[in-house]
Image (cartoon, rainbow, N blue to C red; front, side, top):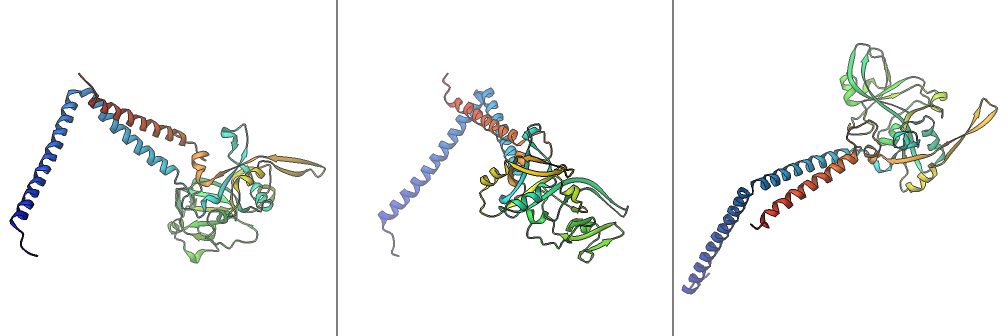
Length: 326
């Protein structure tokens, strides 16, 4: 590169000086605006305090509520193809929400046998209780799921378990964490553990408890056809996994009118009618939670809207400081 001429050096120097002056001018203008804002805050103290508190409370409430909503909507996101799993409710106008929480014990097997759109169906009864194993071990508030052999076909088809042809005795399937607490490993599967008085069928990987069907122990009860296949007993929740590509609306229309004919003392036929409603597993927590909650999902949405209104009002109140003429 050649040497710069005198005129070029002069232009470069003037450009640098102008840049510095403009920068200082910008900083002075910024400081000037800060001073004006500060004076307005001091001049209109009441209105300023209302605006600042309103914005602080509004943003805090909105952020907290959105975090809660995200938590509620996050149930069962870990389950493969959760969008194909539905809870089957039986409509009942006498119940809160217009549906019965429990469905007939025979419903799951009936749906699987009569509707080709359904890939798998299971009856589930989840509960929590302390588990005292012959005073050898004690697990506090253990999550149990009393179910049938189709449970994993619906929720976790990647878990393969070899079941007996007929469940003739009580079996337990343990999560890995629960098995570790009891000092059990793969070498104990398929055996009766006399010290704990359980039949250990298998040990499965731990699954997130942020679910409508969390479990530490899967409990398989001895099969009783008079009870497990009965329409007169309702003691479980029915879940189905539909086949890929199935039209859910069409399937729900079919399930809206189910008629089941049964013998009565071998002399008389009678017909049972059921109207079923399908609720996606991913929306179950927000539409029909199994446990009573004091703050429901629609309350959270209303609270989020109120928080946004508080933010808007506080911000509008602050802008009024720049339009007041006295």
